[in-house]
Length: 260
Image (cartoon, rainbow, N blue to C red; front, side, top):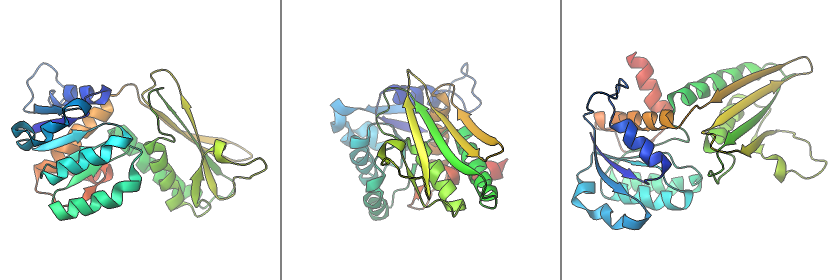
């Protein structure tokens, strides 16, 4: 698989490392993947290079303000793209139109970690159970490294949307700092955030009652899980000629689970 990397920061380097390993995780064997192009802020002209145009897929991890232009540039050149940049969901409608116009598919996920996406499935199931038990109230906390600018994290928002969809007691999410003195949580799911050191990502969901607390937690140990999941999503995207849609990691995961 010929891969173009868009955004060659921390995650871009992790994607490169993961792509050059076999799916088995054996770093002593040579991968069939090839990194054909690396595009960052200082060489955007390479979107029109022969190497980029010869890629099977692009994997994009950049910044919220750059993500739309990066993804759109790839799609308009007919290169399927896997994007893990968060903080630009307000432009998904425009991207969906470009996907339709170009006939080029993409995968976007707030988190490509296989473990996180299993965690999301567990969260959805737990939320359905809790919808029948009014004594339990939900709250969420996310912890990330100090370089992450957006909050709450895209993963936290996705988890919150899962709770809201499954539990009619919640219709929206909010952050503590946006609440006015005296405001009650009401129908809001409260998401707090912390930025500490180089923490790759921790998400904690608490269901609290007067009698006890049930806690669900996913703690990433490093960034390799995100990168491996993104490469797996890229493989899924180009393995067959997928219809032109914006897919999610749940689409990828459902196929993996069915195959197993």
